[in-house]
Image 1 (cartoon, rainbow, N blue to C red):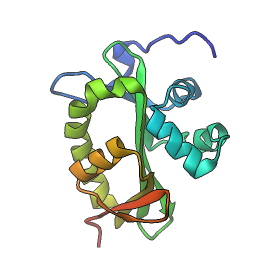
Image 2 (cartoon, one colour; image 1 turned 45 degrees about the vertical axis):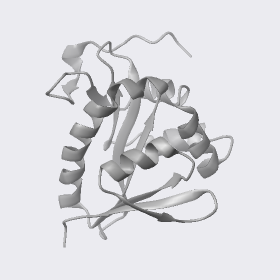
Image 3 (cartoon, rainbow, N blue to C red; image 1 turned 120 degrees about the vertical axis):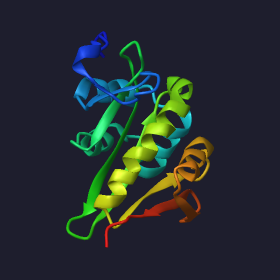
Length: 168
């Protein structure tokens, strides 16, 4: 992988008005590669559970979406991705995702404050927001509960999570 150059602050939009600890930029292949190659161990296990050992290409294809954003730390280094994609055109059902590097732990509180605002916007647009999560990914399960998602057993490896939208 090429040497990574952090983004300059004037090229990004603010994600946190409070501490300006996280900024959000559109996904590029370079940022996405950076995050995927440095996933937290639990997120990596989740991707293996979902896509198998060769998860890199399918994950790249899914995450190169206009509704998925890369989160950068105050120094301009990617710490994760967060976004949503509609999975049933016209029915208003969307998948939400959060995949992060180990450095994300320093920004969790800031992320949760802003994520609640973003999820409320998505709830107005979608009938239901859902996805699957690796059942041993305790950190992801924790943030899902904090953000109001309900969880239930899906299979021996995964939990189903959902949040009812406000769209009728």
